[in-house]
Length: 510
Image (cartoon, rainbow, N blue to C red):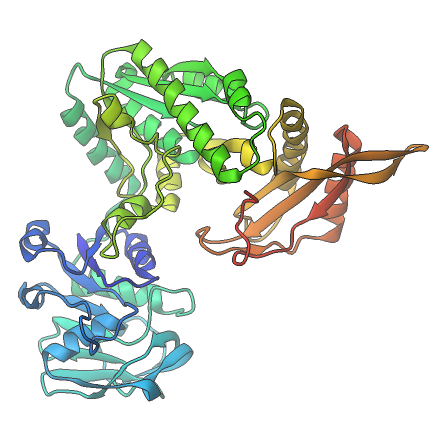
């Protein structure tokens, strides 16, 4: 494996993504991970991430010096470059050294890090406030840019390397190859970490942990993460996996039937369905505040799930669809996240029910989970489905949630899903959905005036959901969408399109 030590860069997860794309397993840990734990991981190579600090500030984060003496190759990126260079006495410059945005990297010396790159000059992305001004004799310059005389360096034995630019971002076209060169050519990784191998190893791990008789209980939401996690656990222990699907009444049209047909009938998973729609609607009566909605839904979900899981009896383990970004956030040197999405990961149920956690996806990113789902044979409409909020349609109704409002939004949402599924685009959308607004407008329908509800359409492009841009859709497509909703959904006479990016807005309206 490749160990990535995180100094707080906004791009650290991207480094891991690029390493995984080379079919090499990697893990992210905080920069100050104890040297004993690093030795226990036995990394084939180490990557030091970038970070917002300056190494020459008081209290700047730094590694244990022993990290550079482990014997494996080390690559420092931006801040990581200075961590390596200052060990050998390099000097840096301050304010005038700042460089943010595109730059031209010129390769000066042949090096395995730059193998299979065409030419000597390449566009790269810089984001730094320091630069090396004086290079000590223990290091050799291998590339420069107009602003950075030592944009890439290495030790004489080739074991330590540092680069000023960010190879992990899309703005550095050569970046994926540079990272691949490091992990494959320099570190000697085989590049054979595949989802097929992951399934084989994870199934064996689950069987060892659960044993021959114990049971696992799991809540299925219909989303990608829980679906793939359930399919993987089911492959390992078959009918000893007991799943609970809570019908909150806040789901999309046909969701319950889809879950019962695919998971219970097609995959043969033991699925218990709890119809709690009336309970959720009753507790949401009169509630307007979005955060209060989320809390009520989360607490009610836990209550219903706990009751249904207890009725199954005998489970020692709780399965969850926790992903690697959640794990990274919890171990970041910046500290655990202040906000925990308890509804997404069924909150404190492990402690309340005295269950041990089984989290088979905790090493994976979202795109890897989708790939895993395909390898497990899950249907495309499960694996490729877009993100859907844990509280469901309740946070796509601005204001009070009512039965009539849910019915209206569910019909409009079905049209949105159908139309966007048939739309052809070079780049798929991150999300597209309908929102019911808490207002009515005057319209003309037939021979009379109407006073009915407004539906907003939200469609965004994104790679990770952290930022998003509104999709520039064809006016003809939007016209057809508006026509269908106003004609087919009784109670709607106006459709608007949201043209706000994230930031300043969020993707969801609530």
